[in-house]
Image (cartoon, helix red, strand yellow):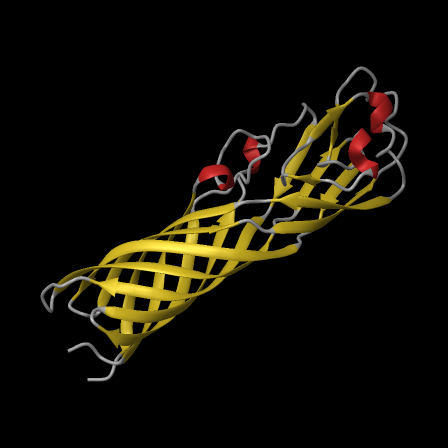
Length: 247
């Protein structure tokens, strides 16, 4: 007999897939495998169906070594932080008390925080500050329950938030001649010809422009808002343990 409701804690690996984890060094999320922690409450409705509400958060570091920059330029990136409050239904197949298969489908929200990105070339330093974005999220999973206590599950989570990122730069003019004949690395779209426009782009586009264009960034201080579109696709491989369930 299934308990009427159960409470579980979860831990696992958050593996980025698709554009969120691509390593091309261009317009992708460049996320590395991270970890996920969460909790869920399940209310048994009957006939193997449970209403499941969950909340989890995932942390994925950015692989800044894949961001393509000219020589003499340094780049540092932080981590993607995402929270997934979700609700939906779990379907448990017939099995023994020690083993059963089940599937899950959920809908909810994803609230994310973009990583801080710092690019430095000569005395010019550009910073893309962390920003918060959210969107509708979907999840689907399949797993197996062991002894009605442990749940091993693989879940696919998907969301497409947009982040309003504030990009700023500071620098001196003393390296005008030093940069002559070299490419200028410009943080995202700070010093390219697109800098005066508000457009939707991917988070790690670093423009390489001529020295003439570089002088747009080569000033005491400048700041511009930009919008970045960042699809979040996670393959969540985890284990849940039901720590409380009525007898």
